[in-house]
Length: 181
Image 1 (cartoon, rainbow, N blue to C red):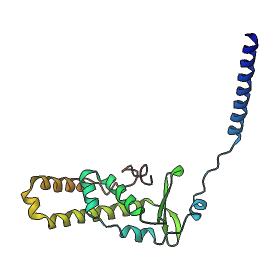
Image 2: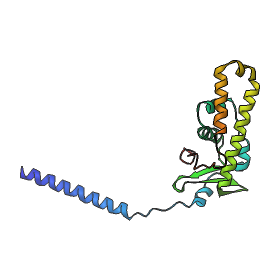
Image 3: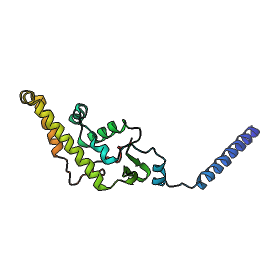
Image 4: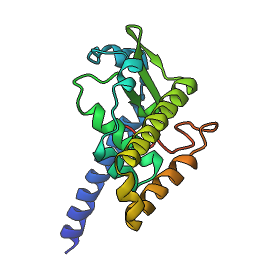
């Protein structure tokens, strides 16, 4: 029995020494911070500029239906992901470790500014509002005679008018956390 205990002790001692050596190796590794420009230079070059790309977003019935059941921020993210999937090389990317977005403009990658964020959000808001109004105009008589559709339209307008475009940013809309998943 004493030999068994000595064998177990020796085995445990070897495991402990192996783990200590592994921890020392892990602790000695230095973590390199990502250089965003180096990372971005390795990405494929997008075929269009970011400012052109956001103009191409069309609010279709699918997005209107999604907006009817979700809030503005979720619809913004849904639309972004829908159009981003269509591209081989996206003109926007995130560097999650730095919590930053970069856009492809004038042939190079640049850090997205708050002004670009606001511009994108305002443009999306404008397009979504126009699509809701177009849907209303196309279905005016049906909306007038159907309480459910009337409520749906009123709910969408209320959601759109409650978005504060003066304070709009990715941070205020919790977009940074879920944008590029």
